[in-house]
Image (cartoon, rainbow, N blue to C red):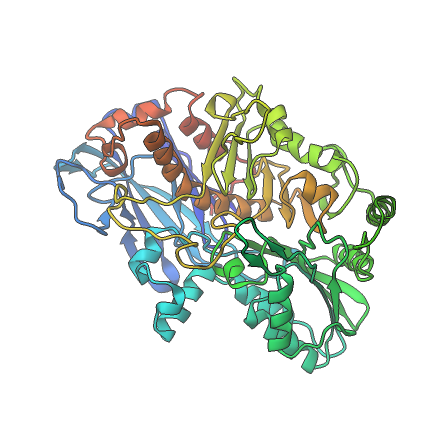
Length: 598
């Protein structure tokens, strides 16, 4: 939801809320800026009868020249020096009032006499009766917050009670939502599942329980034989086939059977779907669970992931039709000639393309929900995604788990001197491939592209605390940080577009793999939830990415910029130019559509 404070001559505050996240922009007049040291932020929670000053991270060096590790400070004493601020500690379906207290004076003699700016906000419910419910795990296993709560211990090294607590903290209701979707299927209903990884025991046992209570469960499970021996002579068993079969055996789901179809054709590509379709009364498609979350421990609790619950019969019908195509295990098989393989794979693409008309331009995207299924021929859909990123009026955001596709680079390289800002959240830093003969194209701030990537701080510069990451926790081995796959075009505009699902915005995801995506047009609620969560993740990694770049380039790292506040109003100079990132980010809030005053 989108909110604004009553307008005054000096300040106005704007806010957009998701489920657990709220992002704020503060518009300050020129008259208000002289001598402004920042803002103390006060949060009022009427339901809990609580009122308190929010903590901060940066401090005045003149007040605390040698800070202690893990220390939080109060923004009442050490104000927020930014016109964009986020609260990532909100509760779902909750009303809050925030007071932004302008602070002037000097660090050791603060002037808090100016009246605060009040804004009331409400977060979205975790579960609703709306078309879309969206669930993000915490996905920041590299944060100091994990270290403060649980140390750097592996999950299996924690005592049982602490292990359960750590898992609950990491999953942040994502697994509960998936379990609740399965639990909503009753006797006589049908549950269609299509999974790349199927090795998270709580979900597998919940599906077995659904079978036991009379739900007609039918699963397509990736079981492709792709075992190999590497150059060092190490044998690697088929993945995820062997793990998936072990889990089916563990929860006693027979396979192959009327309930389980093992997807084995097209062994050189992957059955990358992670969706379920709920059909009431056996044959009436009603709801869909989809997103980026593999049914694995790391999928729910390690790498960044999203689960998306859709309550729309037409969308469910299309997913069910797609499931039926995959249920016969179509595509090329081992032993086929090249001609036979091409014919079988093209037949699969043709059958999927015939399901419904898929838009390939912005103008062709209708309001509401449009599913996109793969594999399909050509690059029309992928090119559309690229153009959506490039065509935003104010902002586009995209997560890229496997690098920046060359199509994006070709389209965005000329984005010099544009007002639009593009945020990319990557699993790994975009670097030249030493084996490639093509010139490396680097997108950077001169192209209005700002990148953050999965990284953690190896030495105690920021917050003076050790960190861990998902690999150290042994949660994931292939993708450690950013596994979600979503794209936002003008998320705070009047006509936002959200694209989310299993595909990685690549040729392989479009042409070869079994994949699904949702195109959602005009739903501000869905856009707000995705946008605030993107903020949370991008903000977490952006500092780390910049720090990593500075260290690798050999430049001196000025820790003062990250640890200490400015002792006067010079911090506002970063907002002087409309071309600067901070000004562009602030403008997203001050120009957003549909803000209300509670």
